[in-house]
Length: 384
Image 1 (cartoon, rainbow, N blue to C red):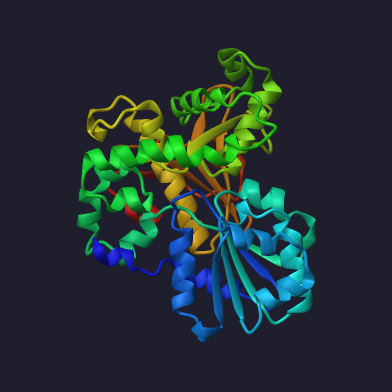
Image 2: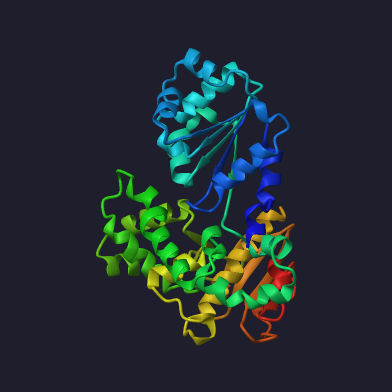
């Protein structure tokens, strides 16, 4: 287990590629996903470590300086350094303007800043850095990276699959050996970290509804989500539901997938499905940590797992695609359609099936490839 703590994640290479004099790189993602570890690895591998500076956004003196917009004070703060790393910038008022002032007077400087969610980055950075920043999204561990840097063989990974499906891939949770400790960590993540960014927003009028909304979404993995039904269940208007779900997306808790619709009149055009970025969080919300093969929702877990891990893989390998699901009014459906380079690649997620019936999709869309079934036997090739 110790080996993975010093493992260089693929994100480190991406971060190095984005470093540019006169620009800032914002590393955003959920709390406890490894942002601080990543920037510290960057500092350790920097060519001139003596010309780097690492500061914490929750430090009072740092906040005073970086929110001052005093050009002289800011200039002194970065004197004689080439790389400035600011961890947790959401604590610093006016940080976007301050970074702009620093880069205006020190165009040689490289800046890396982390934020616990894209909400705060959007709110606090804003317009001042348009065209002068890059954003790197960091996720919890992925099967793609663990397969290469942690497990000795595919067999070892498969033996741990049950634990991964139950407890997810947040670094600290994954590394813990104790089942009870994993559960305690996940409950703490849900209660004290993941919702913290949203609950601090002034426009959030019904914070008590967040937990209930997430629970409802947790039970609807793989199903079409109706905002109207959710609003009825929660006792709030549809616009409130839409707003809260948007906030949950921006906080890296859930991921929206839209329906594919191009030709058929009977295709569902505006439907949406939601997956959880981490299954451990999903299972903590409904307090179900039973073994995978003993669960009634194992099909939902399998679908969520494959979609999110495929998403991570396409991001890390830079083979970016548009992702959709396909469903008609008559019940025909495909779990995932990837659109890339003008072609459609359809996938069905099944635990045991090796094949499925041909759908109308393959006949109606000329660039559609043959549908592939992803099951327990071939899933590693799909996500690694």
